[in-house]
Every structure is written in C-alpha cells, then in structure tokens.
Length: 542
Image (cartoon, rainbow, N blue to C red; front, side, top):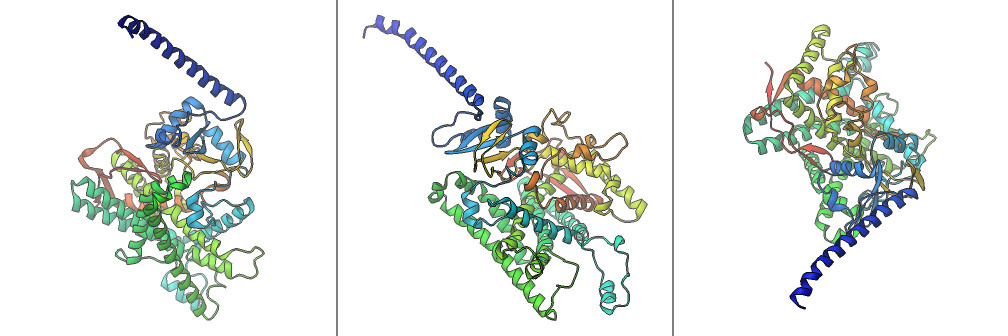
C-alpha cells in the first residue's frame, strides 16, 4: 500500500469508527427504551460471564445508588449469569415490603443457605407464607416473653418459695431482667474500653482490633444470656469460641456470598466454604449442648421442670416449653423451632455489635452531642434517683433522637436480606418473575436528600419537634429493620439494647477521638457497614 493511499484511508477509518459508535449508541438507547416500554427492567449492560459484578464490588450501596439516578428506583443487574432486581427509594421499597408484602416475602434459592442450613432457617430459607408466619410468630412470642421477665432478688425467690407473700415488690417497680443485664454489661464494657485505650495509646490498628473484640464479646455474652440463659465470664472458653466463630463468619462472608450466584466456584472456594461450615457447626454444637442441659434441668425439677411456671429466662426455655406442650393446636418441627435460636443469634450479633461501635464513634466525633446526651441522663437521674428503664424513654427525647440519627446517618444495614416473589408479579409497573433475587436498598431511603434536609449532615435535632419531644412520625421513616412480613423479629430487643447501652456507657464514660479528629472514619462493607478504624479513647468519669 502506498503512502498516499494510507493517508487517505485514515479519515475513512475514523469516520467508520464514529459511525459504528453512533449506531451502537442508538441501538443501546433503543434497547433501554424498548425494555421499559414492554414492562421489562432497565439496567446497566452486563459483561459476559461476570455480569455487573465488577461495577459494584466496592461500596455496593453507593454504586447502586448512582445507578438509581440513571435507571430509576427499580432496575436489573447481573451477578454472573443470575439476574438481580435492585429496589430503591421510599415509594418502591414501601410497595415491595408493605403494599405487596405477601407476594415479595419469599427468599430466593441461595446455595449457601440451602447447603449449610438445610432450608429450615426462618431468616434465610425459602418457605411458604403460612409456615413463615407460624415460626415468626413463635419467635416474636419468645422474645416478648423474655424481654418482659422481671429481675428477682434472692429475697423475692425465698418469699415466693415459702409462700409468705406474693407482693414483695410491686412488679411495676422492677426493672426487667434484660434491662438489668444491659446496664451491667454496658458498665463492664466501658471499663474494658478504658483499659484497651490505655494499653494501645496511639496505636490505632491495635486499638481498633481491641475495641471491636470487646464490643463483640459483650454482644455475644448478652445474646447468650437472652437466647439460652447462660452468662459467661470474660475469659470463658465458650464465650471465646462464640466470638471467634462470629469473627470467622464475618471474614468468610464475601467468599461464600459469591457461591450464591455461581455455585460452580465451590471447587475454587472450597477452603472458605469448609471454614464457613465448620464455624456454623461450632455454633450449632454449642446450641445442642445448651438444649441438652436445659432438658436435663427440666427433668430433674420434680419431673415437671418449668412447665407450670410463668417466667422464661431465655428464648430457649420458652421454645422447649412450647415443644413439650401437648395441648397446643399447632405442631412445630423440633429442628426448625430450635433453629430459631441460631437465627436470632446470627441476626443479632453482627448488627448490634456494629451499632454499638457506631454509637461510640459518633459520640467521640461530635462531643457537643455527647455532652447533651449525658446531660439528659444526669437530669433524669437527679429527678428519679435512678437510671431510666426502656419504658421511660419518652422522658429522654434527645437520646432517642441521637440513636435514631446514628441509625439513619450510618445506615449500617444498607440492604435487607434478599427477597424474592412467591409468584410472578409486578412492582412499580415492571414484571418480576418468581424466584428472582431482589436487593432492597435501605441506604437509598435513609440518605435520600428528598426525604431528609441536609441528608449528609449528622443532626439528631431533626428528630425533636417544636414541643421538644421525640418525633416518632419522622423517626419511622428511618429503616434499618426492613418491613412487612420479613421485618426483623428481633427489632424490639435491638431497640432496648441500643437505648440501655447508651444509658450505661454515656453515664459513666466519655469518648474522645485520637488526635481530635472531627470527621467520621472511612467505612467498609461486609455484612454491615462498619468503621475501618475506631480511634476512640474511653475515659471514666470521676
């Protein structure tokens, strides 16, 4: 080819490239419009084999929120070859979780939940509406019974056994067993945080790891007490196993999640899968040990146990009583019933430990807010000569506003556990096929600038009305517990834990960021959104 013909060919190539690009753009635009016109879902173009995985691999909640600006509140992406529908914004999420709660309350068939939990988990398994309703109601009853059980003194126990009086202390004046537990564990946690702060001083990495461990250890101990009535010493081997197993499950979550969308990767990810299975078996074995222990105690108690008793000190006690009750109209499967304890343990450990961490980090980052929270606690204590109960939270509106704003601003649970329709249906005009994986973005609600003035700003005052009261109507817009039939069964317990932990910690301890940092730390997304560093020093108030 001559030099002249080559130079003449260059513009032709450029024109051809431009033409091809324009044709491709027009076809792609037509493709998106055509999908929407026919009620099919819009969404980004998926790459062969991997789909849109690389586009959302880091900070998925932020990446998907950006896609929402392009494709709308309901759109489709692909993880490998599996389609995933993303639902964002208050209107679409409300239609999905509440207006059409029955239709969209199923769980998709995910490989790990079927493989590890045999499809019997209330939280993860796909089950029919009536079965899920039955066992969710049972879980709610168990938690309701445990959270209202009152603390009994040794004097009360003796009096009741002797039959000398049935009114030693008015039941309305007694703090619940859970509330007393939380106040005690909160104080212990504060003292341990003081110690690790003194130990690590300016070592941010060591301090972060120690603070996270102490918080997780506290949450595991609280859960053990609530779920099977066992409260461990700080160095107890079983408590350490629980903490290590939970940390292991958090670490292996990313690898095992991939298997839900590409089961063929199991050969490559076999070590992570084996670790995940072993950690689950460890927690399951601990639960079986507790079940055997409780049954032995029941049999040794004059052959009657607590069948005639009204108080249930743990969820497990309540569930065993239900299983042993022959008069109940409904039948409960033993395995599925006892798995409720494991479900509540899994759901309430990572999320609550991350919530506790954020409550401390926000307090240290915004010292004026922290002072106002502490002042409200001191005012209540001066008036009533004691710390508040959860039932008295209306007297502490700023604490409620602080907790709610931490939940909103951190939005540390960015998505619900995946939903799926029981049958073919429509959502916001789009056709959703049965079994489709649905990611429901809670982040898109909690940080929506159309719902919240200065949504990126941390302002607890937004939840205080003109009368100085906690604005419950506005607080109800904040969503961290899901909604509808799949709303978190442990929500009430979680709210008690958050309130009482703030009371216990903020009354006796002050939190400061190392170096006087005034910006919140960077975040990481695993199961929840958690702070990369917790560079917070805890100081006991004299």
